[in-house]
Length: 333
Image (cartoon, rainbow, N blue to C red):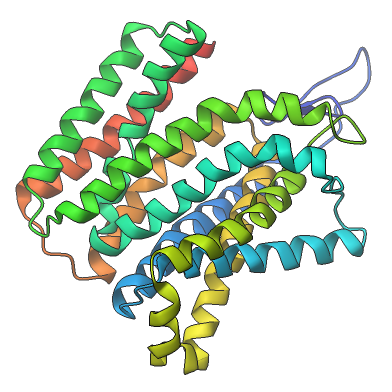
């Protein structure tokens, strides 16, 4: 990610730049940045909480189908917006889909393992355990791309490992199955991050415009995930469950599932908006700080049993995430 500049305005610092003797042009950067930041935080927090509500409170045992439905909603909306001319997307050619398919397999695995882990683990511990992804990614960058990190980054990563281990030990609602799915999710998420950039560069060479924007990636990922999701749903015997469960006959349940799909797409839109209004530095830091209210909301809304030791481990992990974000900023600068 890079710092965005537009029309002589440094969007990262929120300052209006002067050109020669011209008078500075007033900009409502702060209001837009605040609004986009709130939209990004609300959509990202709501998405996880709604998924947790569907999987745990409704006791819905078809996480792959939930992922499938969310992606279907995203495809319908993106295609509709593209047909109306509100956004631009690349045509999904066979060459482009062949290039993107390997990384899409990782993408689907990342979403499915996230659903499975969220069903068994409370939201606060999921946010802390997701920090392990940063450790795996950093090690992968070092061995695959010979990228070196400074001592502050490694110190923050070490704090993340301690918080994840201590959080698991003190977790009163510990579930081995959920933790296994979350560990798998960390490896898949790191793999997706490490392979995405190279795949994007290759994919741009086979597109008509020579570019691949965020909307095209959303459409590409979600469209390719539909047949793969159907196969996995059949493999995990979700079809029999879906045929028998009374939940699919409840209009309120479909409304909640549709809301989760809308929120998933909203994250893509609001993250782009927020990144454009501020910059990579602010975006990264807010993303780390956003985990704090999410964890608190997850504990309160779902009546998660906790202890002083576990709460301290969760807080320690959240602070470690913020320290990591700041260390990465200094490393880049």
